[in-house]
Image (cartoon, rainbow, N blue to C red; front, side, top):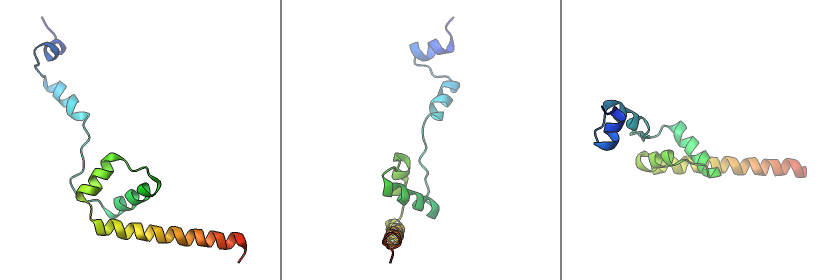
Length: 93
């Protein structure tokens, strides 16, 4: 008599356990728009080039362009003020 593993391979019969294990391995992309905190983390990740594919897909599919631009502009301004302040401290003005 064939085991359930043999049936899956030979006869293309799929057991409920095999289906559950196949579904468990798939990543599910969130179907809602990103929160402000998720937008902030996405922008920070984009600044250093480490954005992952799942978050990028969520951002492009459900995100609001204006929110991302506003957060990116804010972080750019904070970054520039920080660099200018550090340079001012180092050169002693």
